[in-house]
Amino acid sequence: MALDPIVQQLVDARVRAGRTQRDVAFFAGISQATLCDAENGRCEPRLGTLRKWAAALDLEPALVDKPKPTGGWDLVDFSTGQVA
Image 1 (tube, rainbow, N blue to C red):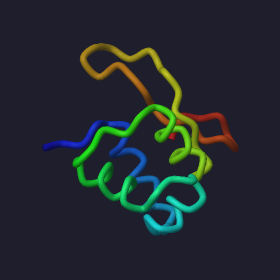
Image 2 (cartoon, helix red, strand yellow):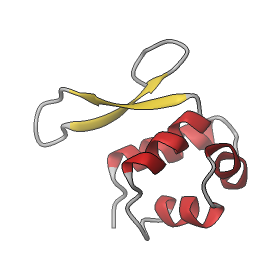
Image 3 (cartoon, rainbow, N blue to C red):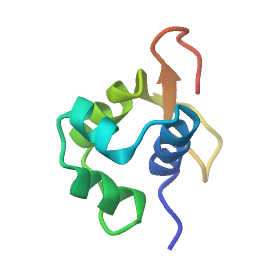
Image 4 (cartoon, one colour):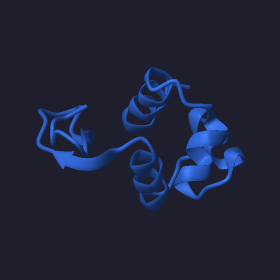
């Protein structure tokens, strides 16, 4: 099963940043098990969880207008305001 695009972006951002699941989960205030389950497609994280997860990576989920069928959430870098 393919990951939701926003989850995949968060996984990619975590890997690029060289951060562990444990580290990100700690700073997000969520359990490592929750993060692991989401990254492995075993659960669909709630919006609040996505926001905490993104904030732990200095990102923010934001709705962006995209052509269908890919419309939906994207990540924005807090420091630059640019889509990650």
